[in-house]
Length: 211
Image (cartoon, rainbow, N blue to C red; front, top):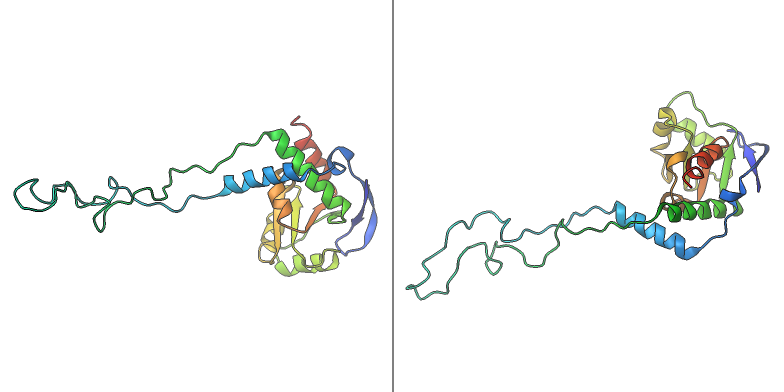
């Protein structure tokens, strides 16, 4: 598959041939759904946590004698039936949401989404992507000239480029990621994928060598 290559001025400067083993893979929605669900589960942070009677502060002694007072017997004021006591069957941080997905499945889903981006003209290749200063204005001007305009876009970088990362982070709907870290969930979260043409080789070297 051949796609257009643009410069930072938004002008088409050539064509690039994409490797078919990455960018010409037929999509399997069920596989993609399974991989994305596993990624969402693995990124989930367990926040809700209720304390059991063993974690609530206080209640170290028996509130009153077992017999002789005519009152119901109690062993602790932190019993779940007392106000301020522990919670029974509440949410705890001990719950594990993580799911394991084989590397081959994750890689296959990634290739499927990359293929869909290329097929639907949502992949934008640049001859280079470089700015001299970490200025949001400079990055905004570049994006405005590209076919994606200012729509939601994921920018895949060849390596950690501080200027590009800082310039893009304040733009709404724009996010940067290293090409070697591309994944199904991040790709599906944005409409366009923008990257320098050399990033194709990085993707090929990173993910095809894992076989």
